[in-house]
Length: 144
Length: 142
Image (cartoon, rainbow over all chains, first blue to last red):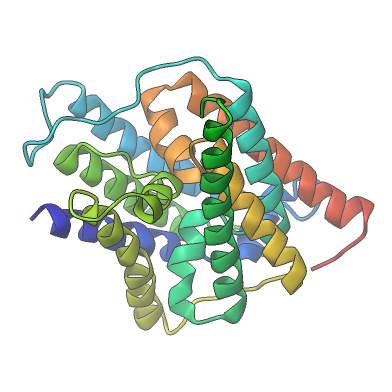
């Protein structure tokens, strides 16, 4: 039941990305191109998603635990730091260059378009390289 | 150039929000793709098996829509070397910044998280600036 609920959530998430055409990088880049022929569709996607997820958060805050009996694992509020800003900045450059963010890149694998696989493989390499940097940094006494 | 598609965008957005809401209410987890991906790759299975199940669901859901709609448009303007660089930046940046469009943009903002609001403004800004430089300063047209 626990695995199934995660699978169903993933399927619905991937289907939503496909319906909203966020799996098409041209659509994403057209949203980001505010000085060109701007396509505001992505704002509708995010706005609609936020309406529903905000309701879910509102319900979650009034419950002691999740419906399948596990505790809510929600990050504690904290102030933005340099790491967050640097990471978000780098992510944005990659997002603008390719038109893919992680969800659409993985969902788009279903299309079999080689470029999506090239992007997703590189993204996995990027994730793993971060873990590698973290390992080296912690060996040298820095804290992740 | 793409057309503004408010109806499909809103319907898809509701589906995404519902998916994130289900994961939160049923499992108590945040539907942040980059966080789920990073931990799925580096933590042992077992307790974390749900992460793989969620990730496998993403292309399954897209495949189902593709089947009903008779295919999905994927128009890629970037060359292969640019795609590789973009993928590395997205992979590394989302781990360093603890989130992406889903974790910060959809789930974090819904909680009113200052970190997520900041991250979303930063990555939207840097992405728009990147597209501006590529398309309008370097003149690379899709």
